[in-house]
Length: 578
Image 1 (cartoon, rainbow, N blue to C red):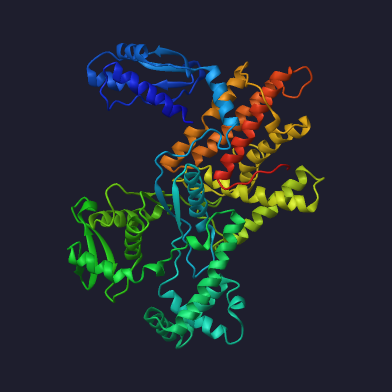
Image 2 (image 1 turned 90 degrees about the vertical axis):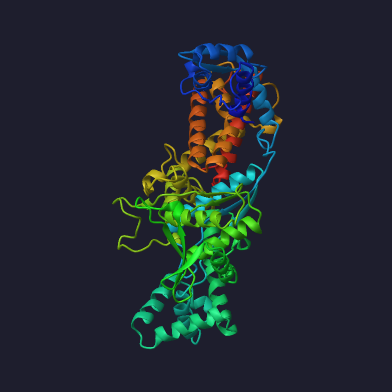
């Protein structure tokens, strides 16, 4: 259920009946203050301007033509033409009853589902995953989960970096290592392995030449070299899969569509662009000049797709990926969860792809840009010595810190429960600290803030869920045993009912705009509204009438289910005890 959409449909019909042009938007949004109703429709002002009449006069006609049905209790015209909307208590209660009876909380899947490709995580397999991969991985996964819940066909694309000149250096080093150990041992620490290979490349006589020979062999399809490369890739992917398991991320090996998969298409693509006159030779390189992105002096933006020596670039691979995703995967929408610093590169790729007609005009290309994770010093997050923070080590530290906090909060827990709760809280804290920030902003990584049990954090929401569930243990009743109508007799009950009914429109907003922090804010506000309800409206207290007790327990259950569903869409676990 999407209240905002239902109201928009009603008010659009009323505007048409009042004589407004069909393209006018009723502009329905939740009210910021309760005295202005539950929602406001503010479209009368813009429509009146186009019609040449007074906004309040048009608002009056809209209200006269409005079909309130069972949904709307009353409307009021305020100011120059704002329309305040008060929803019916009985309609809210009936809507919650429908949500309680439905596994999906009365949120139907999209009636026109799309095929949506999401490009996220994409680690470089030459190295271990580090903190720089955290944001793309968890933001992308949250979007994939939510869009699937909405009923869309989501195709995850993990565009892993498994090709390039650095692999010559790595394969030469691996070949030497295999003389004294197996590949698993040699590649146990990818960062150390990479550093060793780089030192040899820079300093050891003859090694750089061997590395270049390996590049030629690899690109030429030499069987022994390809076998060595495949060993390296398989073990490196295993490192990434371990991170995904720790992070509770849904990416699987079958979602990998790496750079090397496009190799055969790159010469074909370059020739096609040359033949079409979209690419030209310039100083020995093949370049696409984009007049659509010209600077202030009128100079077109240049995107090199083949180097002077014949090598291809990320831009070439990205163009091939767009063509594959639109042509073979039949995507309606392609999301790139990529660092904001890659904005120019992606804008060039998107513009060139459209220029080359690699995708129909109806297919959208969207850069879901994100900012940088910063340290307390305001600089990109690093180790104390200035090195790159391995993602595996960061997650291990999160679990360790959470386990200590859980032990302090509940010292009676046995070691097994403490470890399991510490894992869920620690991983959830790291993910939520990121997802709760507007993704386009930089944010400061802070252990104390993210692991706090107060404020807009995962531990707070996980604990809120646990507290709600504990009510049912104390009541010795299961939610599916509850019956009777939902009663909204107090302002707190009604405020909670309204917030619960808004879950569907929040999911719709995140699916459309790709900002997961909107869902985080909703869940935090829901938990806060629930706490206000719980303080004023006794549930299990002696003397509460049975019918009212059942109603309030049903509200509690809907809060728990909504929190659990929302957190699951963010990839965060809930717990029955903490």
